[in-house]
Structures are given as C-alpha cells and as structure tokens.
Length: 360
Image (tube, rainbow, N blue to C red; front, side, top):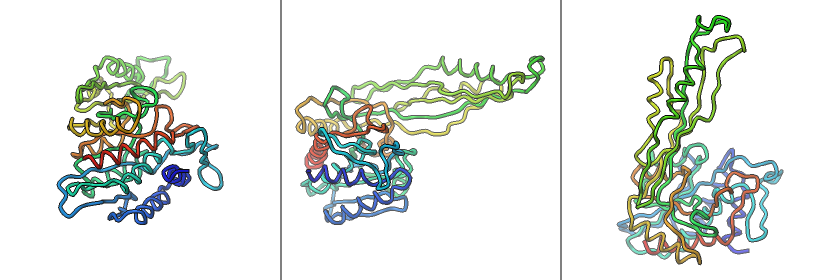
C-alpha cells in the first residue's frame, strides 16, 4: 500500500460527521511530524500550515475540508468508519468528499520544492458540509491567500477518467416564500383570503423569472431557480391562512434571479435562509498553469470546465482569493452509501498539486 493510499485510509477511518476534532488532530499531528511548517489550529477547528521563505512575494494555498456528511449504516460500525480497498478504489464515507484529496494535498504540501518567492499554505477546514462555517471563521481571522487550489471534485467532467480544472462554479441561495391570508370556513370561501392562492401566484412569478448567465475565461455558466416544496392548509374544510414555498436557486458569478418580485403579491414575504457564493477565477495565467500541471499528470486531455456545486472556493473568492477547483471526486460519488475514490486519481491529484506549487 502506497504512502498516499495509507494516509487516505487512515483519514477516512476517523469519524468526522458530528465532530471533526479527531480528524483535525490527525492532520495537525501528521503535519507537525512530517514537515517543518508552521502549523496552527484555530478556535473553529481548522488546521492551517505554512511553508514560507523569509520574504515571500506570492502565496498559494491547497484547500480541503475534513468534515463529512453522516454515514450510511453500512459505512459505520463500533470501530468507526468502515474503509475497504479493492479494485483500485478506496471505499468509505469521505473518500471522495474529500479526504482522498486532502491526503494528496498534505503530501504535496510536504514534498513540493518551492521557489524562494512562494509561500505554500495548506488548510483543511471544518463545517464545509453545513455552509462553510470553517472557511468563514478562517476568513474572519484574516485568512486570505492570494491564490488557492480547492481540492473538491473535478474528475470525469469533460470526459471519463479525466481530472479537469474548474474555473467557475455556481452558488446556492435557499429561500422561502410565506404567503399569508385569512382563515374562514370552506363553505364560505369569500369570507377569508386563501393563502395557497397567493402562494400559487408567487410560484407563477418564480416560474416566469429569467436566470442569469456568466462567462468565465470563455466558459459559460448558467443559473437556475426552482420551487422544491410547498406546505399549507390545516384541514379540508378550512380556508388556509398561511402557505410556505421553498425555493432552490443556483447562482452564478455576478447574478441572481429577481426573487424580490414575489413580494409585489399581497401577503407574500420572501426570506433568504442561505446564500453560498459562486466562484469565478479571475486570472487566466493561473488557470493555464494548473491546467498544464493536470495535463502532465495524466494520459487524458483535461479541460477548463465549470462545476454545478458550491464549495468553499466561493467564500475564498468572495474575500479576494483567486481560486480554482481540482480534485479526485467524480460525479455521483459524494454523499452516497457506496462512496469511493480511485487510487489512481488520488495519486494524480498529488502530482497536480505538487507540480502546480513548484511551477507557481
């Protein structure tokens, strides 16, 4: 078993869906033992390490997260997470999202031969799966590298077996519409105001909204907005006085759907519950540098692509870091009961991260 596979298996075996502290302990201890970097652990639980010359002129960060979503029953036993290695893959909760890529970034951080001008940073955040709480805490504490490669999934995007480089991804804005009316007996509907009817009018408004698009380094990315839940009414013979509608909106850099239009309907209030920012790379030379490293690390032909899912890169980009996303996870792997990562691709990511740091 290679050092990288063994490190991945060790990380994946540590439960981190409710409390990521033990996984953070492992990462912190490994960095302290294996590198001469300055390693810190902030109050949120993020692990941050820096390899820095005396007078760096530029900084590059390799970014991951070590929290995971709850495991399926077959992924957990009395000893912790179940991890299996077979058929060239590592199976277990967090292999794809994203401890395999975290392990690759840890080894690349240790092994990269740096120029005298480059500060190389490694960061593994907590709370990515619950809205980026760790990344936001680090940013609030002043974490702001100039450039970052966020190790979320980018494999099999342009074609099978290829690890691509993501130059933009969508954000997610979750919101609700609350329509209010006046209750009455259903035998006298004119005596009340039907909140469901008002909600339906609001839904019609949502259906008629245009969604923004954006172009990032020549690649187009589209937003979306869709109603996903509706709840209202208390009994078959009562005119409902409230109705709630849930909206899932995927945002693009610089654009939102105009959901505020729904509040032009009497009795309708619109409330934003979560707003995960999108990401757009603003430096073509950086994108080409990492793409070149990806080309040299594999036999396939990686491309610059876009990604539909929000990541911590959105928070970093919003704070001024130029970001790209590149990682081992393939579509359909994260958060599943059969979650796995290809050993070959995890090793490929190690080469991409190491080469990118050395050429930066």
